Amino acid sequence: MNDLLARRRGLAKTCSHPVLLWAGSRVSRNFAANTYPFRASSHFLYFTGLNLAEAVIYLEAGNLILFWDELPESAALWHGDSPTRAQLADQLQAQASYPHSELFRFTANAATIPLVNLGDRLDQATCLNHPVEFPLSGRDLELAEAIIQLRLIHDSLALTEISQAIELTIRAHQAGMKATPTAKTEAKVRAWMEQVVAVNQFNLAYISIVTTQGQVLHQEFSPHPLRPGDLLLVDLGAETPAGWAADITRTWPVSGKFSGTQRAIYEVVLAAQTQAIAAIKPGVEFWDIHGIALRVMTEGLLALGILQGDLSDLLAGDVATVFFPHGIGHLLGLDVHDMEDLGDLAGYAPGRTRSPKPGWQYLRLHRPLQENMVVTVEPGFYQIPQLLEKARLDPGLGQWINWAVLGQFADVKGMRIEDDVLVTATGFQVLSQALPRDLPDLEAFVSEQ
Image 1 (cartoon, one colour):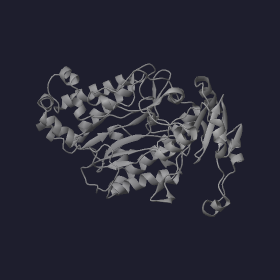
Image 2 (image 1 turned 135 degrees about the vertical axis):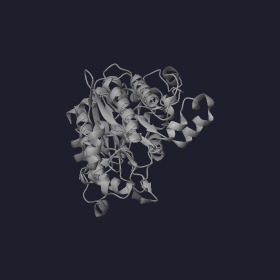
Image 3 (image 1 turned 30 degrees about the vertical axis):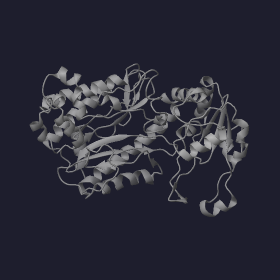
Image 4 (image 1 turned 180 degrees about the horizontal axis):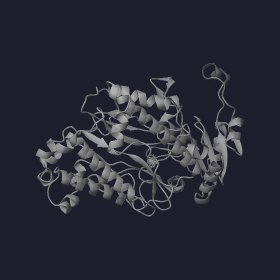
């Protein structure tokens, strides 16, 4: 609780307005009583640690007031006992607590952050008597900027939570690796992994990607059989009950052994990740971290003969983005893409905007790194049919690709390696280091029964 109180006091130092933050409401599926599992707004969670639907908090001068309507007695029939408002207020060390009907007394000059759900935003607007939308302006923008400065730099409570999420995520990935040699389908491996998360009463931080179709960057389904020679790309992260996320990707061979072409590409991707991580320290621009990974990818693909021509020309034309089309990583915290509900306000330093250049346009973080930031570093190689076809039809781009050599790498549809990295006072710490990543260790772990 001391960390939560410190966060509230920290907000009061940089935000001059009183603040109202909504947790949000349950979202229904098909009919009102059939709801999805509830997950409170991350901004609400940051100051309360409480996953409480329909709650609102008022923050001013470091103090908190809770607004929440106690559940009717009839709710116990379906949901069991529920806490009282007084009990929740005591848990939060709130200065006072009221039912929702008293909110109108606290709305004057209050700043807020719009919720993602449209119905919730309408409730916010009704209560505040003005639209609550993006782009933010005035006191709402001031609040967002104050929260960003707090959440960019993780405190001890946040780092403990993130470490717990990473530890369980590693165990889930290990379970998937062990299940692969005997599993018949992607879904079987996914089930083994997700049950590790469920048994420990954590949640998934995002929809798991467990696929042999790694060229589909966000493949949400796992319907395919596993065949010898396939690569299995697994991007799965756990989320603690308090909402803090992990985000780890590994790519391993279904057979337990990479083919020669798979091994060659894996070594390029791993070198890009290793050198990008090695450059992380306070003051370094994340833009430059992406540039390091892109350069190493370009050099590696040139050495393999997939790219051809002069290195400087390949780099100037961002040719490797045909195979590595996304940014090197993103912030990690309460959200797996932390604070991206605020658009680029958090990821991009003031005055910076997205580049129109291929690949670079998807970079989610464009700030100098600071101590106690946590970021992902996740280079990849993908043979995405749409991008390859576009390159073939573009004489200016297609000339740099040796299509005959590329054809020899048909068994590498998609490959990504992703780790969660803490920026330390003097450099970095790979928080997910315990999960096998180097080729011999990865092959051995998958093959051993």
